[in-house]
Each structure stands twice: as structure tokens, then as C-alpha cells.
Image (cartoon, rainbow, N blue to C red):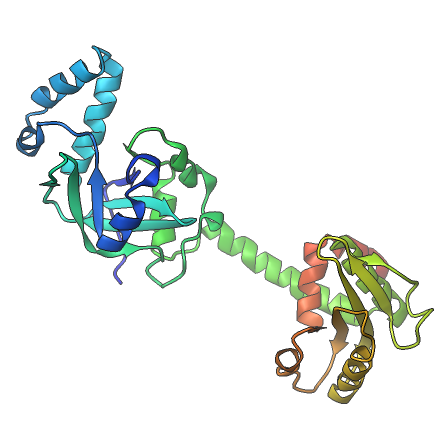
Length: 308
């Protein structure tokens, strides 16, 4: 897909309470209420006549009538190169619309979408609400039908699949931090490595049943998650082999009270890519995964201090 370069972007609410969202998305249309007998006047640009109608509907409220006209004019006058957005099922949808405005029997109007509505950027990445700046998504609370948006340049970049420069810089810095954390982890004394894993589980809300490796010779951590009500068998090794992991999996399977197993290590030269698929309740945390968890848990400073 080619990159978009709209002069204007408008949010459109598809029906009161979203009643037209599904049909418009699936049929490839934009639909405007504002039912009135002035469709032809709107096509002809006779906005004074349209304004008089809505001023009467609004009981002489000039501000309300002006807001009505501005929204109606946008629906009729935005160019085919401009962009329309809406939100449906927690995704942002966008499209270009053909310039022809068609009046339906109920006096609502539609414009047909050029191609189809899309909930992905031009590179095919989903445009999920949780990954979009709140200054854009806040338009969902707009009480009218059509409005402009804040951060239009940001949204154009988002749809074009371009990373915001400051985001790219921060992602690079975070990746560098994770790499440095990996080096620090590998240099830990085995006892401190076990303590780090204990802290990672604790930060994630797991509660220990017993002291590290003291009560059961086969288990380094016996932990319970109140939120999921699952109990986990945790084994920690600085360096390991595939055979050793398989041996501990067999041991784990002998304990019926555990819901899942975590095997945590920082060095292994064997291919372990199939183990989790063969054993759905077994989770392997290698060095890269562990470094990310340390950063997410806010334990980077603890690790730095431990290695200082």
C-alpha cells in the first residue's frame, strides 16, 4: 500500500451508540444521520438554506447550529485523499471515501469507502486502541458525529507504519539496557542468581511456600500465585543441558500438586525450541527472557548494586 498524505483527518461516529458501526465496516460505507430535506442544497453548497433549517431545529442556538453545519459540510466536502477514522471492537479503522454522497430513504446519507475500511497500518500491523496515543482515542467520547483530531501528524505516521523518532530512540536504548543486563546476570554468583529469580517471581506476585532449595531436594522454588490460583515448581540453574531439563521435567510430572513448571537458566548450548510445545505447562526462561523480566520488574538497579 502507498503511504497516505491527507490534508484532513476526521473521526466519524457511525450512528447513535454505534448502531451503524458493524454494517458500515462490513459494507464499506460512511453513514451520516442529520436527517433533513436539504440533501440537494448540501450537494449544491447552499449552506445558508441548510443552516436555516438546523437553526430552527436548535431553537435559534447559533453555536449548536454552527457545529451541525460544520459536521455536515465535512461529510459532503472532504476530498477522496482525506482520511476518515472510527473505532470498532477496540481497533482504529481508517479509510478514504468516494466523493459522491448518496441519500437513503430515511434521509440519512452515505459515502462509499474506496477499497475497504482497514484496521491495520500500511505494513499490515493491527491498529489496536491500547497502542494509540490517548489524545487520538479520546474522540470516542465526542458527543457529536464528526470532529477533527489532535496529533494528526502522529496519526498519519501511525497509519503509514512509521515509528515515532523518540520511540525508536527509546526502543534502541531499552534493547541496549537488556543486552547489558544479560552480561550482568551471567556474572552473578550462583547464590545471587537464585536470589534474583526469587525477586522476579516475588515482583510478579508469586508467594513462596518454602525457602530456596531447603525443604525439597528437587525444587529450588515452590511458589503460588493468588491471582491465578496456580502453584509452580521452579528449578534454577546457571548452566544447563537439554538432558538435565528433561530430567527435571520428569521430576515435575511426579508432583501432582503443581500446575506448571519454570526452568530458569542463563547458559545452555542445546536447541530447546521444541520443549515448551511438547510440554505446555513447562516454561523455559533463558537469558534473553530473563533480562527482559528483570527490566520490567524494576530490578536493574538491584542487579547493578549486586555486581558493583
